[in-house]
Length: 294
Image (tube, rainbow, N blue to C red; front, side, top):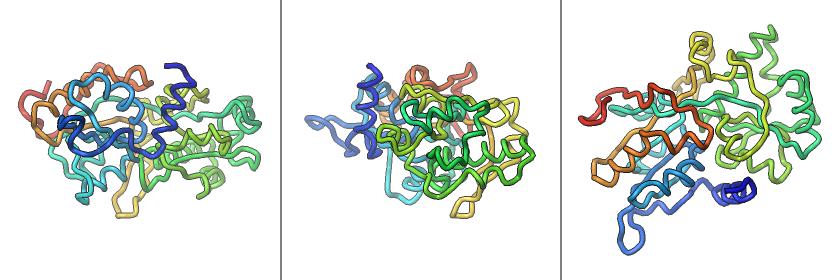
């Protein structure tokens, strides 16, 4: 798929739904319902959906919002995949889940706007942030992990700069967009740069500035320093800094759901979309059903 076609395809997914979410497909064929993190939308819809035998219906939202939909009984997916493993325990009390991939934060920019070029040409990635002539996009920290991880990265950068007010000088409420629509704002010229996962920039063919490992939440060697930052969600639960990982669980035990989940665990559907699938994945946590552990 060319970059142009990929962007057009992703633009069609901007509503957050990649396929119908009803329980039956063509001619009564059963569907496996997958509710996934917004940053998994393209990988699930372009690749996982085309490599699984049962028909797969994919719905995508920010992971916090997705977890709340399940917790409140508003969604009942067969498979749930989120961008923060802690959500399975913090919001869902899930008995088990599997860690399947990792990622890191980057600062993507639009090379076709003056503000985007300022981001590209700046001596350091922090220099253009907070400037009136550079419009920045991010996601809502109350709805998805990318949002609070952006805050974590800026707070970690503030400590490295010995500048306690740095994060506050960069952030403003009008920067927030749904995760499934964030980079689509580049297409309209609404923003010049955005904090995103590396995978999001890779699959959409956007250039980006790399962040230092001490800041990008992608290096397990910095796990202790990442843990020093946190964000309190509206429900009173606290998200804590940690190396970025994705996790999934299977909420049904029929044969079709098991086949989809086995493909999901293999991780091949993620590699081409810029996710890092480490040798130790999948890593099982909790009371894992027989036949899955190891």
